[in-house]
Image (cartoon, rainbow, N blue to C red):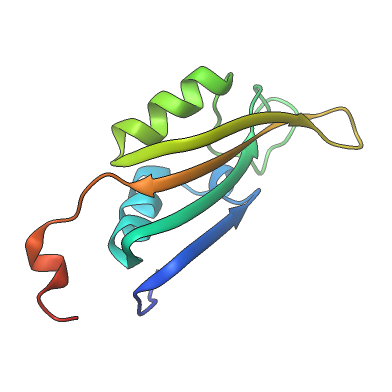
Length: 108
């Protein structure tokens, strides 16, 4: 990603599962968010790779999603599982960066 921040809020709707390196995408989001900023993510919350060849990453359930985001520097403020019109499950996560390195703020 080649974006300039900082941003108060970043929204990622049904896109993280299409990335080759979701950890790198989250690292970029973390870097681009202001302190106390918000990341809103919607991602399938059930295995989908076998039925959608465009999905490169998946979580198998909400608990795995929470662990994934927490292990990549985000605090989960809210996590809710919903069902779309096609009866597919997806997780809606409201996240906040846990911390930023002091050097990240030096140029702001």
